[in-house]
Image 1 (cartoon, rainbow, N blue to C red):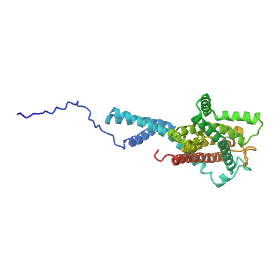
Image 2 (cartoon, helix red, strand yellow):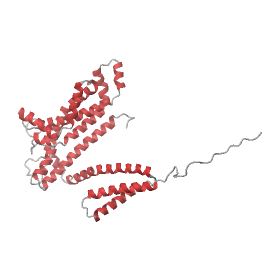
Image 3 (spheres, rainbow, N blue to C red):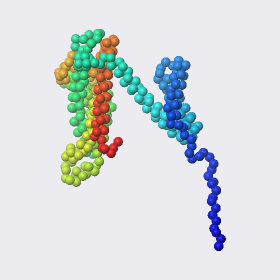
Image 4 (cartoon, rainbow, N blue to C red):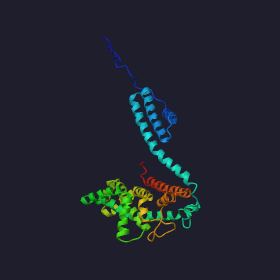
Length: 358
Protein backbone atom coordinates (compact mmCIF):
# COMPACT_ATOMS: atom_id res chain seq x y z
CA UNK A 1 0.00 0.00 0.00
CA UNK A 2 1.59 3.17 -1.15
CA UNK A 3 1.21 6.46 0.67
CA UNK A 4 -0.60 9.19 -1.26
CA UNK A 5 1.38 12.29 -1.86
CA UNK A 6 -0.08 15.77 -2.38
CA UNK A 7 1.76 18.59 -4.01
CA UNK A 8 1.24 22.22 -3.02
CA UNK A 9 0.48 24.34 -6.09
CA UNK A 10 2.95 27.05 -6.76
CA UNK A 11 1.94 30.67 -6.18
CA UNK A 12 0.95 31.95 -9.60
CA UNK A 13 -0.22 35.44 -8.50
CA UNK A 14 1.20 38.17 -10.70
CA UNK A 15 4.05 40.11 -9.26
CA UNK A 16 3.10 43.76 -8.94
CA UNK A 17 2.08 46.35 -6.37
CA UNK A 18 1.66 44.73 -2.92
CA UNK A 19 -1.78 44.63 -1.33
CA UNK A 20 -0.65 46.94 1.46
CA UNK A 21 0.68 50.09 -0.21
CA UNK A 22 2.61 52.89 1.41
CA UNK A 23 0.74 55.55 3.34
CA UNK A 24 1.49 59.20 3.93
CA UNK A 25 1.87 60.28 7.58
CA UNK A 26 -1.16 61.79 9.25
CA UNK A 27 0.54 65.15 9.58
CA UNK A 28 1.01 65.42 5.82
CA UNK A 29 -2.18 67.46 5.07
CA UNK A 30 -1.34 69.98 7.79
CA UNK A 31 2.25 70.29 6.58
CA UNK A 32 1.15 70.65 2.96
CA UNK A 33 -1.41 73.28 3.97
CA UNK A 34 1.17 75.30 5.90
CA UNK A 35 3.66 75.07 3.08
CA UNK A 36 1.04 76.00 0.48
CA UNK A 37 -0.02 79.06 2.47
CA UNK A 38 3.57 80.20 2.89
CA UNK A 39 4.35 79.60 -0.78
CA UNK A 40 1.11 81.27 -1.92
CA UNK A 41 1.77 84.35 0.19
CA UNK A 42 5.32 84.49 -1.14
CA UNK A 43 4.14 84.28 -4.74
CA UNK A 44 1.54 86.96 -4.10
CA UNK A 45 4.05 89.27 -2.47
CA UNK A 46 6.68 88.80 -5.16
CA UNK A 47 4.09 89.14 -7.91
CA UNK A 48 2.78 92.40 -6.49
CA UNK A 49 -0.74 91.10 -5.80
CA UNK A 50 -2.38 93.42 -3.26
CA UNK A 51 -5.53 91.39 -2.61
CA UNK A 52 -5.27 88.78 0.11
CA UNK A 53 -8.07 86.93 -1.65
CA UNK A 54 -5.73 86.29 -4.57
CA UNK A 55 -3.08 85.01 -2.16
CA UNK A 56 -5.65 82.63 -0.68
CA UNK A 57 -6.72 81.30 -4.09
CA UNK A 58 -3.10 80.68 -5.06
CA UNK A 59 -2.52 78.84 -1.76
CA UNK A 60 -5.65 76.72 -2.30
CA UNK A 61 -4.55 75.69 -5.81
CA UNK A 62 -1.08 74.85 -4.54
CA UNK A 63 -2.56 72.78 -1.71
CA UNK A 64 -4.71 70.76 -4.13
CA UNK A 65 -1.89 70.18 -6.59
CA UNK A 66 0.77 69.27 -4.03
CA UNK A 67 -1.61 66.96 -2.11
CA UNK A 68 -2.54 65.08 -5.27
CA UNK A 69 1.06 64.81 -6.46
CA UNK A 70 2.37 63.46 -3.15
CA UNK A 71 -0.49 60.97 -2.78
CA UNK A 72 -0.12 59.75 -6.37
CA UNK A 73 3.61 59.17 -5.94
CA UNK A 74 3.46 57.43 -2.55
CA UNK A 75 -0.01 55.84 -2.29
CA UNK A 76 -1.11 55.37 -5.88
CA UNK A 77 -3.56 57.13 -8.18
CA UNK A 78 -6.71 55.66 -6.60
CA UNK A 79 -5.83 56.93 -3.13
CA UNK A 80 -4.66 60.20 -4.67
CA UNK A 81 -8.10 60.76 -6.19
CA UNK A 82 -9.69 60.13 -2.81
CA UNK A 83 -7.35 62.60 -1.12
CA UNK A 84 -7.97 65.14 -3.89
CA UNK A 85 -11.74 64.93 -3.35
CA UNK A 86 -11.26 65.30 0.41
CA UNK A 87 -9.00 68.30 -0.14
CA UNK A 88 -11.58 69.95 -2.42
CA UNK A 89 -14.21 69.56 0.31
CA UNK A 90 -11.90 71.12 2.90
CA UNK A 91 -11.00 74.01 0.60
CA UNK A 92 -14.68 74.67 -0.12
CA UNK A 93 -15.43 74.60 3.60
CA UNK A 94 -12.64 77.07 4.35
CA UNK A 95 -13.71 79.37 1.52
CA UNK A 96 -17.23 79.39 2.98
CA UNK A 97 -16.19 79.90 6.61
CA UNK A 98 -13.43 82.48 6.20
CA UNK A 99 -15.69 85.31 4.90
CA UNK A 100 -18.22 84.67 7.67
CA UNK A 101 -15.52 84.60 10.33
CA UNK A 102 -13.88 87.72 8.91
CA UNK A 103 -17.21 89.55 8.86
CA UNK A 104 -17.97 88.57 12.45
CA UNK A 105 -14.50 89.47 13.73
CA UNK A 106 -14.48 92.82 11.93
CA UNK A 107 -17.96 93.68 13.21
CA UNK A 108 -16.93 92.83 16.77
CA UNK A 109 -13.78 94.95 16.45
CA UNK A 110 -15.68 97.94 15.10
CA UNK A 111 -18.78 97.67 17.27
CA UNK A 112 -17.33 96.67 20.63
CA UNK A 113 -15.98 100.18 21.15
CA UNK A 114 -19.50 101.63 21.09
CA UNK A 115 -21.72 98.99 22.66
CA UNK A 116 -22.22 99.77 26.35
CA UNK A 117 -25.03 100.42 28.78
CA UNK A 118 -25.62 103.94 27.55
CA UNK A 119 -25.75 102.80 23.92
CA UNK A 120 -28.33 100.12 24.71
CA UNK A 121 -30.59 102.27 26.91
CA UNK A 122 -30.74 105.60 25.04
CA UNK A 123 -32.34 106.74 21.82
CA UNK A 124 -31.32 109.37 19.27
CA UNK A 125 -33.82 111.95 20.51
CA UNK A 126 -32.08 115.29 20.98
CA UNK A 127 -28.75 113.91 19.73
CA UNK A 128 -26.99 115.55 16.80
CA UNK A 129 -26.23 113.01 14.11
CA UNK A 130 -22.91 114.70 13.44
CA UNK A 131 -21.86 114.41 17.10
CA UNK A 132 -21.22 111.69 19.66
CA UNK A 133 -23.75 110.03 21.93
CA UNK A 134 -27.07 108.42 21.23
CA UNK A 135 -28.09 104.80 21.25
CA UNK A 136 -30.29 102.09 19.78
CA UNK A 137 -32.94 101.62 22.47
CA UNK A 138 -35.73 102.93 20.22
CA UNK A 139 -34.55 100.74 17.32
CA UNK A 140 -34.26 97.69 19.56
CA UNK A 141 -37.79 98.17 20.89
CA UNK A 142 -39.13 98.61 17.36
CA UNK A 143 -37.38 95.50 16.04
CA UNK A 144 -38.63 93.31 18.89
CA UNK A 145 -42.23 94.52 18.56
CA UNK A 146 -42.28 94.20 14.77
CA UNK A 147 -40.82 90.69 14.86
CA UNK A 148 -43.23 89.58 17.59
CA UNK A 149 -46.22 90.89 15.65
CA UNK A 150 -45.04 89.20 12.46
CA UNK A 151 -44.52 85.94 14.35
CA UNK A 152 -47.97 86.16 15.93
CA UNK A 153 -49.50 86.45 12.45
CA UNK A 154 -47.31 84.06 10.47
CA UNK A 155 -46.83 81.21 12.96
CA UNK A 156 -50.49 80.11 13.36
CA UNK A 157 -51.26 80.44 9.65
CA UNK A 158 -48.08 78.63 8.66
CA UNK A 159 -48.65 75.86 11.21
CA UNK A 160 -52.25 75.25 10.15
CA UNK A 161 -51.30 75.32 6.47
CA UNK A 162 -48.61 72.70 7.05
CA UNK A 163 -51.03 70.50 9.01
CA UNK A 164 -53.51 70.71 6.14
CA UNK A 165 -50.90 69.81 3.52
CA UNK A 166 -49.57 66.82 5.46
CA UNK A 167 -52.70 65.43 7.10
CA UNK A 168 -55.59 66.42 4.82
CA UNK A 169 -54.36 67.79 1.50
CA UNK A 170 -54.74 65.28 -1.33
CA UNK A 171 -56.49 67.15 -4.15
CA UNK A 172 -56.00 70.14 -6.42
CA UNK A 173 -56.31 72.61 -3.58
CA UNK A 174 -53.30 71.09 -1.82
CA UNK A 175 -51.28 71.26 -5.04
CA UNK A 176 -52.26 74.90 -5.50
CA UNK A 177 -51.31 75.75 -1.91
CA UNK A 178 -47.96 73.99 -2.31
CA UNK A 179 -47.30 75.89 -5.53
CA UNK A 180 -48.06 79.28 -3.98
CA UNK A 181 -45.95 78.48 -0.92
CA UNK A 182 -43.03 77.68 -3.21
CA UNK A 183 -43.58 80.93 -5.10
CA UNK A 184 -43.78 82.96 -1.87
CA UNK A 185 -40.52 81.44 -0.68
CA UNK A 186 -38.67 83.23 -3.47
CA UNK A 187 -40.51 86.56 -3.28
CA UNK A 188 -38.02 89.43 -2.74
CA UNK A 189 -38.57 91.40 0.44
CA UNK A 190 -39.06 94.66 -1.44
CA UNK A 191 -41.97 93.13 -3.37
CA UNK A 192 -43.68 92.21 -0.10
CA UNK A 193 -43.09 95.76 1.10
CA UNK A 194 -44.57 97.27 -2.08
CA UNK A 195 -47.64 95.03 -1.77
CA UNK A 196 -48.37 96.12 1.80
CA UNK A 197 -47.61 99.74 0.93
CA UNK A 198 -50.09 99.76 -1.96
CA UNK A 199 -52.79 97.81 -0.11
CA UNK A 200 -52.50 98.84 3.53
CA UNK A 201 -51.14 102.37 3.33
CA UNK A 202 -52.41 103.69 0.00
CA UNK A 203 -55.63 101.79 -0.72
CA UNK A 204 -56.88 101.48 2.87
CA UNK A 205 -55.36 104.75 4.07
CA UNK A 206 -53.42 103.55 7.12
CA UNK A 207 -50.34 105.52 8.17
CA UNK A 208 -46.74 104.40 8.57
CA UNK A 209 -46.32 102.23 11.64
CA UNK A 210 -44.51 99.25 13.03
CA UNK A 211 -47.57 97.13 12.33
CA UNK A 212 -47.34 97.94 8.62
CA UNK A 213 -43.80 96.63 8.59
CA UNK A 214 -44.79 93.52 10.52
CA UNK A 215 -47.39 92.69 7.85
CA UNK A 216 -44.67 92.55 5.20
CA UNK A 217 -42.40 90.57 7.52
CA UNK A 218 -45.22 88.09 8.13
CA UNK A 219 -45.55 87.53 4.38
CA UNK A 220 -41.84 86.74 4.19
CA UNK A 221 -41.94 84.53 7.26
CA UNK A 222 -45.02 82.48 6.41
CA UNK A 223 -43.60 80.21 3.66
CA UNK A 224 -40.55 79.43 5.79
CA UNK A 225 -42.79 78.31 8.65
CA UNK A 226 -44.95 76.25 6.30
CA UNK A 227 -42.01 74.45 4.72
CA UNK A 228 -40.16 73.71 7.97
CA UNK A 229 -43.32 72.55 9.77
CA UNK A 230 -44.36 70.41 6.81
CA UNK A 231 -41.04 68.59 6.79
CA UNK A 232 -41.18 67.99 10.54
CA UNK A 233 -44.71 66.59 10.36
CA UNK A 234 -43.68 64.21 7.59
CA UNK A 235 -41.01 62.77 9.89
CA UNK A 236 -43.60 61.62 12.43
CA UNK A 237 -43.97 57.82 11.98
CA UNK A 238 -47.30 56.71 10.56
CA UNK A 239 -47.35 53.93 13.16
CA UNK A 240 -48.14 56.52 15.83
CA UNK A 241 -51.12 57.78 13.86
CA UNK A 242 -52.36 54.26 13.13
CA UNK A 243 -52.05 53.24 16.78
CA UNK A 244 -54.10 56.26 17.79
CA UNK A 245 -56.75 55.52 15.16
CA UNK A 246 -56.89 51.90 16.34
CA UNK A 247 -57.83 53.13 19.81
CA UNK A 248 -60.72 55.10 18.36
CA UNK A 249 -59.14 58.54 18.72
CA UNK A 250 -60.47 61.04 16.14
CA UNK A 251 -58.09 62.42 13.56
CA UNK A 252 -58.17 65.98 14.89
CA UNK A 253 -57.32 64.79 18.38
CA UNK A 254 -54.57 62.53 17.02
CA UNK A 255 -53.00 65.53 15.33
CA UNK A 256 -53.36 67.66 18.45
CA UNK A 257 -52.21 65.09 21.02
CA UNK A 258 -49.84 62.83 19.06
CA UNK A 259 -48.48 64.38 15.88
CA UNK A 260 -47.80 67.94 17.01
CA UNK A 261 -46.16 67.04 20.36
CA UNK A 262 -43.91 64.56 18.56
CA UNK A 263 -42.73 67.19 16.06
CA UNK A 264 -42.74 70.18 18.43
CA UNK A 265 -38.94 70.34 18.62
CA UNK A 266 -38.46 70.62 14.87
CA UNK A 267 -41.40 72.99 14.53
CA UNK A 268 -39.96 75.32 17.17
CA UNK A 269 -36.55 75.19 15.52
CA UNK A 270 -38.00 76.14 12.14
CA UNK A 271 -39.97 78.95 13.74
CA UNK A 272 -36.87 80.38 15.42
CA UNK A 273 -34.93 80.23 12.16
CA UNK A 274 -37.77 82.03 10.38
CA UNK A 275 -37.70 84.75 13.05
CA UNK A 276 -33.95 85.09 12.59
CA UNK A 277 -34.47 85.44 8.86
CA UNK A 278 -36.90 88.36 9.05
CA UNK A 279 -35.04 90.19 11.82
CA UNK A 280 -32.49 91.62 9.40
CA UNK A 281 -34.89 92.59 6.61
CA UNK A 282 -34.43 96.23 5.60
CA UNK A 283 -36.46 97.03 2.46
CA UNK A 284 -39.99 96.50 3.92
CA UNK A 285 -39.06 98.41 7.06
CA UNK A 286 -37.73 101.38 5.11
CA UNK A 287 -40.94 101.66 3.08
CA UNK A 288 -43.51 100.98 5.81
CA UNK A 289 -42.09 101.84 9.25
CA UNK A 290 -40.55 105.14 8.11
CA UNK A 291 -38.12 105.47 11.03
CA UNK A 292 -38.04 107.69 14.13
CA UNK A 293 -35.42 109.15 16.45
CA UNK A 294 -37.57 108.82 19.56
CA UNK A 295 -38.96 105.87 21.50
CA UNK A 296 -42.33 104.74 20.17
CA UNK A 297 -43.58 101.70 22.06
CA UNK A 298 -46.91 101.65 20.19
CA UNK A 299 -46.44 99.74 16.91
CA UNK A 300 -49.97 100.65 15.77
CA UNK A 301 -49.58 104.41 15.98
CA UNK A 302 -46.93 106.45 14.20
CA UNK A 303 -43.51 105.68 12.74
CA UNK A 304 -41.08 103.40 14.53
CA UNK A 305 -37.42 102.58 14.20
CA UNK A 306 -35.73 99.22 13.67
CA UNK A 307 -32.15 98.01 13.84
CA UNK A 308 -31.67 97.42 10.07
CA UNK A 309 -33.03 100.88 9.22
CA UNK A 310 -30.99 102.46 12.02
CA UNK A 311 -27.82 100.93 10.58
CA UNK A 312 -28.64 102.24 7.10
CA UNK A 313 -29.41 105.73 8.38
CA UNK A 314 -26.26 106.01 10.45
CA UNK A 315 -23.97 104.67 7.73
CA UNK A 316 -25.47 106.14 4.56
CA UNK A 317 -27.24 109.31 5.72
CA UNK A 318 -25.09 110.55 8.60
CA UNK A 319 -21.87 109.65 6.78
CA UNK A 320 -19.31 110.60 9.45
CA UNK A 321 -17.18 108.82 12.03
CA UNK A 322 -19.80 109.04 14.78
CA UNK A 323 -22.46 107.64 12.47
CA UNK A 324 -20.16 104.83 11.36
CA UNK A 325 -19.44 103.91 14.98
CA UNK A 326 -23.14 103.80 15.87
CA UNK A 327 -23.87 101.75 12.74
CA UNK A 328 -21.23 99.15 13.62
CA UNK A 329 -22.50 98.99 17.19
CA UNK A 330 -26.05 98.37 16.00
CA UNK A 331 -24.76 95.76 13.53
CA UNK A 332 -23.00 93.94 16.36
CA UNK A 333 -26.20 93.90 18.44
CA UNK A 334 -28.19 92.65 15.44
CA UNK A 335 -25.72 89.85 14.73
CA UNK A 336 -25.73 88.86 18.41
CA UNK A 337 -29.55 88.82 18.40
CA UNK A 338 -29.74 86.62 15.29
CA UNK A 339 -26.96 84.37 16.54
CA UNK A 340 -28.79 83.98 19.84
CA UNK A 341 -31.95 82.90 18.03
CA UNK A 342 -29.99 80.31 16.05
CA UNK A 343 -28.35 78.96 19.20
CA UNK A 344 -31.74 78.72 20.89
CA UNK A 345 -33.10 76.86 17.87
CA UNK A 346 -30.22 74.38 17.93
CA UNK A 347 -30.63 73.92 21.68
CA UNK A 348 -34.33 73.20 21.32
CA UNK A 349 -33.64 70.75 18.50
CA UNK A 350 -31.06 68.92 20.59
CA UNK A 351 -33.30 68.93 23.68
CA UNK A 352 -36.37 67.63 21.87
CA UNK A 353 -34.59 65.18 19.56
CA UNK A 354 -34.98 61.44 20.22
CA UNK A 355 -32.41 60.05 22.63
CA UNK A 356 -31.19 57.53 20.09
CA UNK A 357 -30.98 60.05 17.27
CA UNK A 358 -28.18 62.24 16.12
